[in-house]
Amino acid sequence: MIYTLNARDFLLYPAMKSYFALNAEDIYQALQNGFELLQRQLAAKGISYDALKGALIPNQDKKKFETCFVIDTMQMDVSDYGYAVFEKLIPLLDHNSTYSILCGDYIDYLAPYCNDSQQLLHSALNDVLIRCHPSDYGHSHQYYLIYCNRLTGNQRLKIVEGLYPHPWFTGFADVTYNSQFKTYISTILSPLCIKNKTKIIMPYPSNCREDETLDPQQFLFVSNGFSVCSINEDSYGAFLSYKIESTVPDEQDVAFSFNALLPKFDSLEKMNLNITEERWAQYLTNTETGKGKIIETLGYHAEEKARFQKEVFKQICANYIYNLNQNSHGAWLFDVCVELPTKNGHRRKTMVALKYAPDTGTVDVVTIT
Image (cartoon, rainbow, N blue to C red; front, top):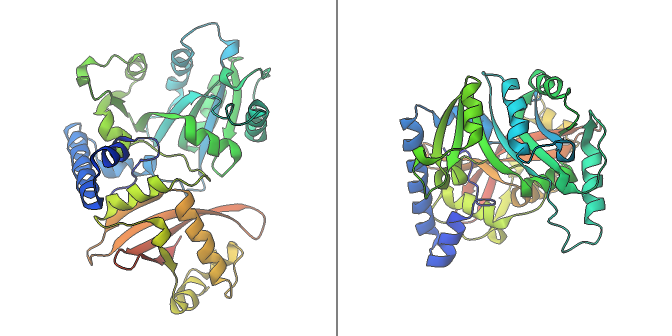
């Protein structure tokens, strides 16, 4: 089971494929070897890969939230604002949960392509921001963002209350569901670490020895009761860096994820999503013994199989696939998280389990939760 592969932000394997003209079999072997190396590194540090699952895949727990904390650096009188923020944030982190932490400046990648980029970025932030202190928006660059992918309401409240005394704490955004802001930060934030209870897993540069890294934030974690475990960035980047969900398609990332699953993959264009009439009628829309209540909640009717197929396939192509594995019967399986509006006006994250037949390019829906 490979929970996730990041070829969207981490480009080692795409670069290898392009430079050395590798085929699908070569990439599959390289990814398998890379994943085995990661497992050995984690085992040497006493870390179970399975224990990191929640930090690596989209969250479906209704009691846990994706949260982005917003810092106005113009209200800070230090140059190393990242260190200053984490000095206040780390003591607020609990010692029992597992999640990924990403961070970075709210930089403007749109400016070369869009004359009103700052207006768009300001609007995207305002649409989701729960404000705690006033902040005069001058430029997006003044904001520093810290994202956590799986906080409970109480964990988030503790952080908000702990940061509230500081005027530079502008507020926070609940980014559990899709928004323009969430899609944009998925392209700009970088992984800081995985917090696995009291263990902090961080990447270190591949051209350095582990004991050469002197990250000041490591000392902050240690001084607050955490232990820091370093993993080579080549392994971390591909297999441990969480991908914030996005509505922007990345066919390369999806293709490499399939290639981590099996040694034979052609292209997304040749894939065909299939739901048999029997499975649709007797299981997926059956409200007594199947998944019909979920289908109804999402606003689909028994005669709308084609619409459901179209939406699921769009989500496969537009986001990322996870829980990549081959079962005991030799079937190639993966999951995709589909975010759809419900009939009562809310939104629901639904996991769709799928089976892939590489010889025909057919993807069959197995179940939904």
